[in-house]
Image: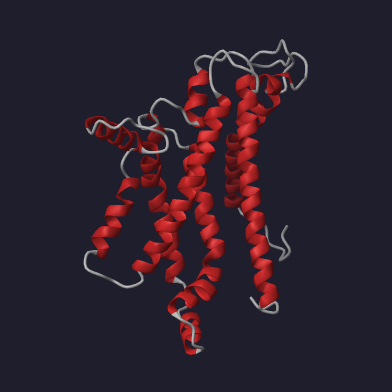
Length: 279
């Protein structure tokens, strides 16, 4: 019974069951990997567990017979941060540019977002072949960076365009009426209002790049990023050290999301203080 005295229909329970299965399929494997990563030194890749320890987490940071966890992790972080900054910057600039229609704006928009429907592996293959034809060695900081931007920029553009579509230009008009220059209007009025959404764009760009496999496969060159390293380890590593790696990377992902959400909450509270609690 609900508060209004009406019974919940069958659709509610069907949707609840579907959501329960969704959560199970999403977090069940993560929970399994996390549990198995705490196997004892003689533990294997499956249940039942043979002891409980943090042996495999320690082993992860030791010299491995195969794999370069530390180097691939640093490369993925550096690549993800670079992609994040460029995605926010170019998405914001495009948002300002598309506030007014110009010749070819529609075609340019559809051309920019067209890469979303192209299979990622084809994009990776095409960029890798182009670099080889030009005689340029593919690298994670060059060709892979471009490949990742073809994936993150369209999402950033769509988000920023949606933000500007509901942006009230009256704020800018009020700033100009008070004598603000165009740059002062952007810096002190527009950007503070857009900042929480831009943080979301940055988080989106970072996570898409950090986890990207297909568009990195043919473009990373001689040095793997973390997704490529994990894939390679699945064919060579036969100990729970791989599970320890998965646990740490999952924890890192949740930490990044938590930090960004905390930053958004702090910015929102500061805005509320400045406006005297007004929404």
